[in-house]
Amino acid sequence: MLSLIPFLLIFIIFYFLLIRPQQKKQKQQQALLDTVKKGDKVVTTSGIWGTITNLGKQTVTLQIADNTKIKMQRENIARLRSEDEDKDKDA
Image (cartoon, rainbow, N blue to C red; front, side, top):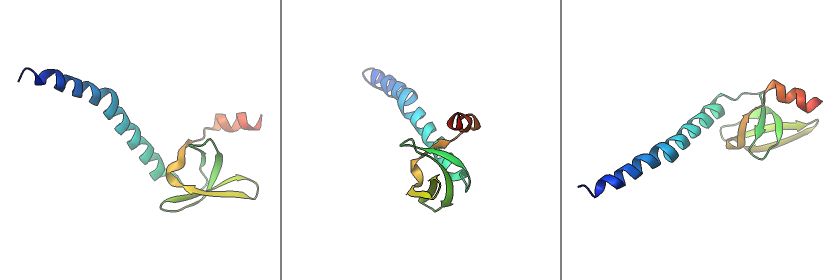
């Protein structure tokens, strides 16, 4: 029984340092994907800035420039753009 204690401690440390934060991050990302809507300004995982023009169950269409739209997986939305970023882009 005493030989199991170090393994349990290592597992508990791994859980709180690696597994739990990753699960929390996944939940936050899923919450973001569930709340995005048409017209939201987003940044993709590849760094593309765009505005959502159409939402599907698994796909999203982004307008990235005048008359330029791309269709991509919904999971590739990394985050919403802040208004400060929009001001920096125009400067």
